Amino acid sequence: MEFTTVISTITNIIAQATNESQGTLNYLTEKFEAGGGFMWPILVCLVLGLAFSFERFWTLTRARTNTKSFILKVKKSLDEGGVEAAKEVCANTRGPIASVFHAGLLRADEGLDAAEKAIMAYGGIEMAFLERGLIWISTFITIAPMLGFTGTVQGMISAFDAIKEAAQISPAIVAEGISVALLTTLFGLVVAMILQVFYNYFVSRIDRLVGDMEEASIELIDALYEYKIKK
Image: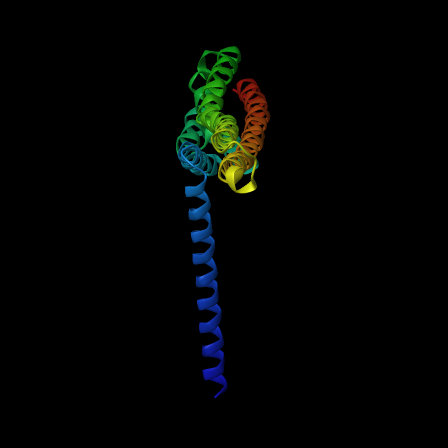
């Protein structure tokens, strides 16, 4: 009897949650249609912005490396097997830090200055790769509210046109135009806020990765200097 009651309670909760989600979806669909033509480009900004955001999230997740552990592996390989062994460790490790290390080790035979220049040059390339796509997210953050404000202007124009045609001011006459004005502004701002959260998160992740690259590069140059002295 108790088991039947539990099953019934769970079923009711699931049914209630489903009804609430359907009700929310229907409400959003209704407001989207009421917002007029400017809602579509705002929706496009959201979809494209999220697409770039998911791509950056996947890329930055793959770029994450345990920096301290990796540096220790490279130093150990450099001491035990020389530059070639260290390059092998870098080649088998993914991430921007490993790529920068590999570029520096490739020029290690030409001297510390050449290795340092290679690290700096490839570090700039890796940084550009990490930041790729952020400009589009930033663009959609800017465009979405601008589209919303443009829809606001259109809605207000429609409201005043309705007043002009009716030759009187009535809430019923201007309600549709004002509704369009408010909805486009609301949706545009919401889209911009959602994408801004992703953008700030990516910038903080990239700053952290770049900081790790710079710190690790200094340690690599020091390790190569010590290796040259021992050699």
